[in-house]
Length: 104
Image: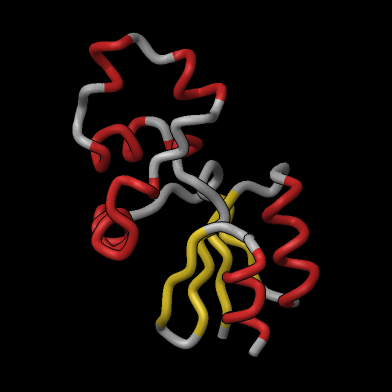
């Protein structure tokens, strides 16, 4: 089973859901558990934070210095999306490399 973690209004997440015919878990409506956040951070490191987002740009400098897991717990939209879980393997984003891996 394939699960896509993202936001239902995100165009990239919608594209991934359409191509993969997967379930979308909206992280705004259903926040990630601490275990999921830790798992994603272990897999991707600080790359899980989307530092190009409008949410990030709106944060004060002191807030940006907080630990990535604390930031993601307080601001779920800071997560780079989508995170795709297929057959127990995690993928980040919807670039050509991820598409090739999940469609293989």
